[in-house]
Amino acid sequence: MPECQNCDAFVTDAYARVFTPRGVENPRVCPDCQDKIRDGAEVRTARSPRNP
Image (cartoon, rainbow, N blue to C red; front, side):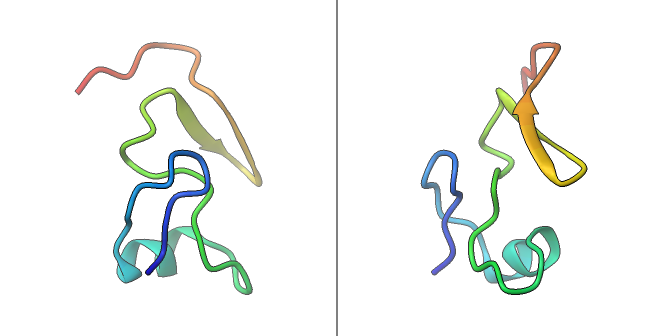
């Protein structure tokens, strides 16, 4: 089962398939990572608060 590399949360196979590059099994960040965002090929801290 895929897990987020940042917070170790479970993600679905569909999410991992869409948001990970080929050859990588686990996404770098997930929707539960409110303080992190994907920025191109990198992951960075969000510049503004992410409150659901």
